[in-house]
Length: 101
Length: 504
Image (cartoon, rainbow over all chains, first blue to last red; front, side, top):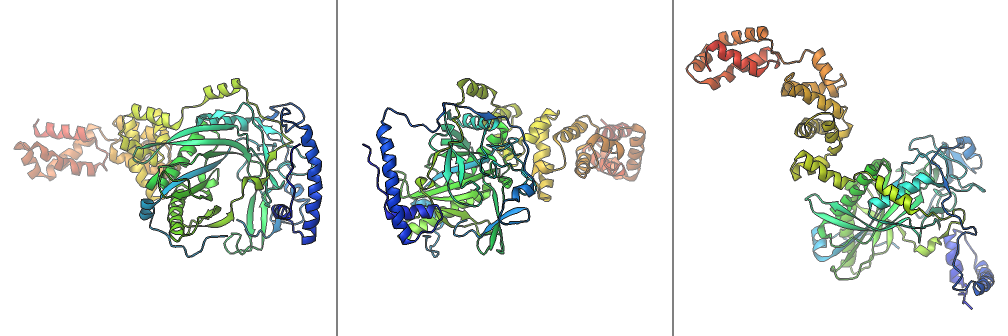
């Protein structure tokens, strides 16, 4: 059986950072445990997926589904911004972007 | 996380004497398709914000991507032009990161299966040396939207209170071309980096897959630089300076990073693997974010798209249809035109190759086309702070002007006046000569009058000529040209004088 590495507190903290969410210490503990049981469940799939079963990214064996390079109907600016929490000058307004450029 | 701000830059030549720089360059090119990579929104540069979009461009729930056939064709063209192998099958992947210019929180890109891989391109340096750059891969992906930072004094993030996002650019097809490490460039690293990007830019234009305007961001370069103690040592830690947008900035970036990294190493510190930003005003780079590891992007195959498997027939069809590439074209034109290597290089640097070729196609001889574009027109362009192609004159007009000179209708001096009038928008050369009565005067009745006057005014010169000093004729021709506003047919004037004075 394929061994799945267990998920520790550090892994959860790192994932939270990548996902831009803030977790309390208690949440980190809880998720570490929960992720572990998810990983166990996934591990049972690995038992079936032996080396002679190729990895697949799509359930249907299709290739080359293309669209011709032709302009289709677009949204108006009003429609585009309809769902925006905030808009300004025809653009989506988002909170200050920190720490990166 | 950033290096100490007080790192002292090492003098460039000294840094090169003690360290061996290695380059790596990633070039993004926006493809000139009519629509975006995965949806039918128009791929246009200038539009009202958030109008060139569909639900797919915005990543709205339920919207699904479909691959643009032409974008794949263009990517294959680029791959073939860079001597790459074209994948028998390849797929798209999701590259996850959070930034407001991506609505989906992932960029649809290619990861482990790029469409093109393992190629090379030869670049020519200023002195004619050819360097081969190895290409690792070229892959397809989508561009992101555009952030405008508001509230800061300089439009930068620093000090901004919030940001505005326009998604018109989101989903525009990109091809990213990644080199293998480029070693052995030594002190020429800055020149090699710029020449490589210029070579790619010229190839994109020749292939007609992109307008490839640097200033518009159609072509953007990320410049990786690392230093090692000697060419046998292992590669040092690299930095990646993002989105450098002009050839001059590319050179300055490489130069600065070499000086800076040498300073870091001299101070006994380690170069930190990070992205950096180039600043046009200071010519320096500053620390951005620490470079994410590939695993931080948590790539996985895009489940909404099926693999792209270009048939070998299609690939060969595209290969056959490839136009003549810039390097081959330069060699051919060099042979056809008979320019010296130096003349040819000047022509290339002045962006005059297309203009001269078009002038020749319109009937001018190659030397005369070069004379106009590299002489008078280059001078005027410089005075007006314009690039040659931006002058308000067409190659056909240049050819027409030269045609008038060749036919003896106007002389070189008048031709320059006509040129100025063309540039001022007064019309085509022949029409200007006609309207303004600038044609050479070879009508004997007019010329004879002027000759008689000159002979009467200059008895001493006449005496010299009669005594055998034929070269003194020039002293008579001057006033005659003046009397005819430069339009006299100098050859005919000379004949008339000699007839009148009975010399030969």
